[in-house]
Length: 84
Image (tube, rainbow, N blue to C red; front, top):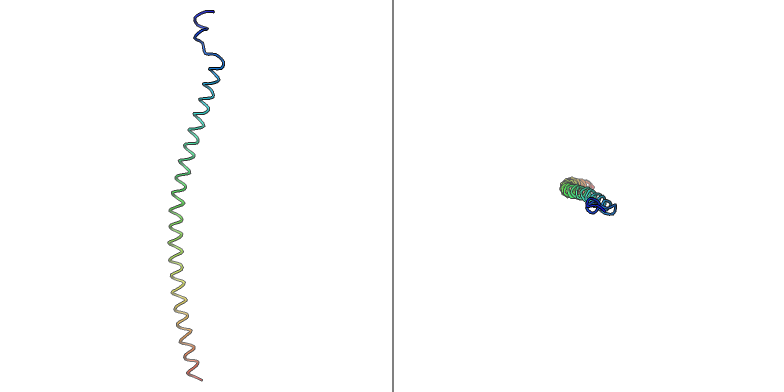
């Protein structure tokens, strides 16, 4: 056995390094995916806040129109009753 063969990487060592390299690549991809997911969650929060604001404004408009129509309906009923 010569000195070179004693220091040469074995097949098991090469396999271990290959598997660690694959693990490192997988962890890097997972880290990027988690970062993208966090960004999407932030954007979802912004969109939900905008939807809540829009729904509130839309509800306020609806209530305003309904109140106006109800007051006009009450006025029409009082006119009808006074005509009788």
